[in-house]
Image 1 (cartoon, rainbow, N blue to C red):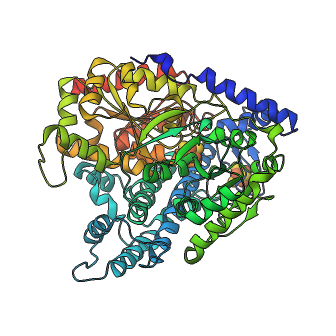
Image 2: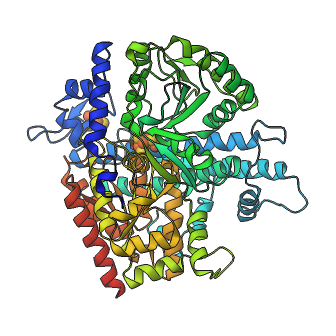
Image 3: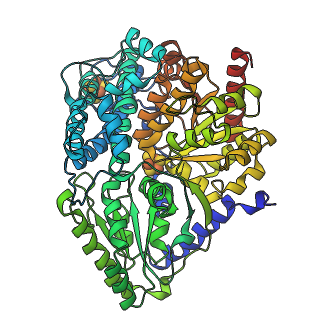
Length: 631
Ligand code: SF4
Ligand code: MSK
């Protein structure tokens, strides 16, 4: 029987990184660890959120001696404005990603390269959005659905269409609190307007706009991104794959896809399967082409193709440091601008593909939907040509890797639950078996663990510790983004991870034949988690704040995470954070994000940098909800 030793420890991951840093020293390359040192100590004003540069009278920094900026804005106004601008950037990132995907849907045609892969989901969404489907060509329907989706960004009136999917109590609350999300672009523009010099200085008013805007992300941009991606590339299904640096191969051409938007990586993956290109690789002395993923792009292609995953956010430099990466193809978001310089210390070709993420020193190949497949084939051929340039003296691939079972969107979770009861309560399935297990105490509850890893703390450690403790306490975990990647590296997505679970969760895993951590996808797919929690609340017949389900971001770092945390709280689920938001310089803001939002949405942030304390906080929170439900 596997034990905790069966899994890859943080110490082993750190040893791999330390060995790769030796290579970095040998080739005189710097890594993020060097830059962390150079940036330490961090600027206290920035950390506390009380530096304002919203006009050229400043920058203004708040101190005991100077409690107001030149215009009179105090610490609360400045911290709130900075915070809301983070939500605006995060909302924009997820939503603009969705907009691009909608344009790809508009480009679909039967002869490709982009086609409709999940017709059932398209018909379902068309019906939901009032697009005619009877006796119509599937591509005409797809193009009309894309148009409706694109209108969600700029429609003059009305609220986000997907808010209809929420529980009635959420819809009523959002309306009564005045935070129903309107057009996505409008919410972002309004936030930027409110935070311009000479506008809102009231922290609560700003927080309310932050909540509203974040809902335009969770129940707008992100949900659109997920739905349309499924329509284009298929709704994910369960795949067994592998993760960590050991997925790079000594005798194959290694191509790494990194970022978030799968429109690009899907083409690279498909091109690499081309028989002619595989043959070409063999003609160059390699055994074939090995595509692996990083960050959320990895999650996207793993869930749809079983592509193996090299790791999460802070692994991106390590991949190049192996000396085994012939090409890294990136799309958007979470890409270190340091990568082209690092790639130049090796033979690695570093390729950007989107006008949204241009980086000096990169080879830029702007992808266009009509020519995407041909462009991808050219890139794969270039990578193959680069194989012969590998410098064996710089080569070191850590052997560490783990088996992972991935690909649990809500549709798969429902399917697994239906299989055990054979209940088929209604056409769409039901979460009732899971609810019964929670009511019986076999499961205490569920936690959605999401987000990045972060050198502010010991990278990956908090994710690992929190996951292990929750599993041991019979709490089911769903994961996405770099947290899911961390679970992959550690071996916690292996079905054998059931052996470190409590007896109740282990029984559930055996019955359903699932790992105890369910991989739900990329950051944008946290929208799937919203629908999972909504489905549980609806089938239970209670409100979102009542279910023993919470969110957790142990090591978040990006502005997207700030937006996500806010839409999860707006959706009624408490969020447990291991990194403090940068608002500490304002007592009012600290109160607003922890207790203040509770008065508006019924949920708030609980912040603790100690992972063990954070788990305790979560378990206490889950047990308190159970007690209120009388279970
Ligand atoms: Fe200073 Fe006010 Fe200008 Fe900000 S908006 S930089 S606080 S004067
Ligand atoms: S990639 S936002 S580092 S989870 Fe989605 Fe990872 Fe965080 Fe980027």
